[in-house]
Length: 361
Image 1 (cartoon, rainbow, N blue to C red):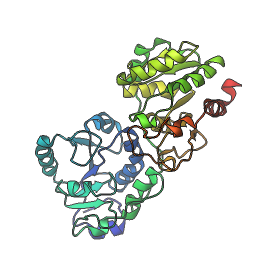
Image 2: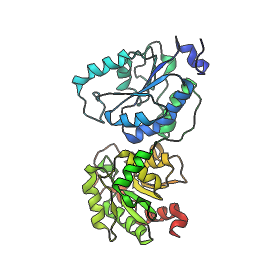
Image 3: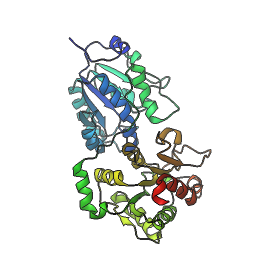
């Protein structure tokens, strides 16, 4: 019987061919995009296996498009995971669905393992590979497949640490965000003038208020770019309409306001044609990295070394080093949100003009 070209160290630990793989990562957009290089390594190691992403409901459309993922199973949250409220009444059925797949291998690619290692063990896979901090539970018999959770470094590199440990050859560190012709048609339906003069996208939203730069400062940068002849397109989801309206109200120029008029994929189609993205440290910055669109990212509170795009030439991140970083708060507990206030509009504009280069010369 032929086997896929996985590393000998992995073959020694596995008791039979690997045909069904579960990868677990129940997080949000940027977190999932950063896992793509590790999933690509899994796909290359077991090209004939069926790889199922186990994640939150929102991720199903992304899973359906990624070349390294074949299937998706929703996890309805879990006690101790903060991303979504857990509907514990749905957990038994979800676990039964997972166990019925009879996975040969489950990969815990969510984090350090305190909460999720026992959860992933309940998937019932024949083998389990996982991250685990010292003292965190590891599956008996599969200790060789587990490795320490990296406490430092970029998220892409942290996740690749598990596939490196398993001996799976890397397949690069680039991200993926597949945009199709249907998405481009949807964008033209929302904004027929997309094929006009060059434009920049300004995205003032972020899931957490502690990660948001002041709307007045976004407006100042947007006006300065409009002064140089660029169309400014404001983007955001429908719940961010008030935030985008604040930016628009502070501007001298009239921007194109597409807030709430695009879905995730037509937003990607919009971004792929943009000359530049100006945004907070949020999921859209990772889409820009995947699409190789230049960006300027204002990082308020987050761990820059962990989340900044790896391509530091195409993507500029502005952040002020402070003792309270990285911030774990939803809302900044310090008066005035000092890490956000420390990043000045002039600095963001200078970075934007450097990224735009000859467009604004």
